[in-house]
Image (cartoon, rainbow, N blue to C red; front, top):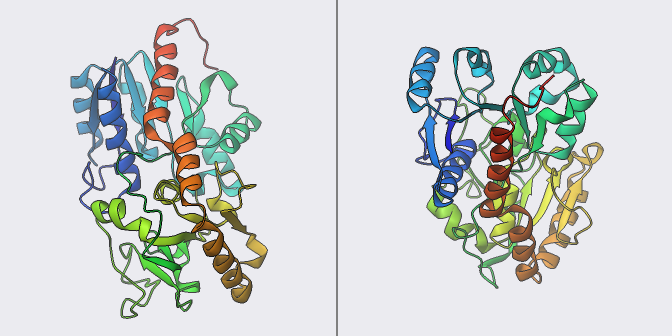
Length: 321
């Protein structure tokens, strides 16, 4: 198959530094090509250029990741068209009407979580148009040490912005923070404090994430954060907010969820993180095994390719209403 993914055009692909979606698309390309498919990436802010580049690819499958480009689908030709949004705000109740408009069309929708699939069905989207495409991480890239260098420290791996809520937790001195600052005008972290490590390049994430006991991610809103998949692959436990818990098995002892009602209870959060550290450093191998079984992109891309192969074979025979 000839597959074309359309990105936002905000950052290069592969990303030089940060860029969760950009990394995901690049990893999809790597595995899709390994499985014998052609894979093109269109990554520009110019809508007309999106149309020109995509048309030149002559794809069997178009997969749009950028909400503002969904309106371009009528100008694009392919046997199968897919959209997927990683924008958490669009799934909020206040965006209900916008989401209904966003999902109207003769295309498939890749859902990052089962919860999103169920919500879209509730909005009236035909189940035949929906399929699950979980976010994941490449098992072959992430180093996992049996004994971390910092067994009593946690890492908060995220772009620094209001939604990620680093400002609420930077005074917890056993948490280190890594990630680029989104806006100097709305500073959400004190960059002069020693526990702010700045932006980590991907190579450092691959090699150094494993030196911590666990990942803390207490965002106000998420869809299915890539950071949790990365941390599990590196052997880390998780302490996450409710919104950051998608696709996780919450019964596992190395995964803790902080209820939104307790997000300002600092002593409780510190106690949960410390307990999770102690459990997680003893379960590194089990954590990695869980990550490989649930979030290895090699497997997830194979499932994705099986889905779109089925869609291509059924093109014209399925009513997407």
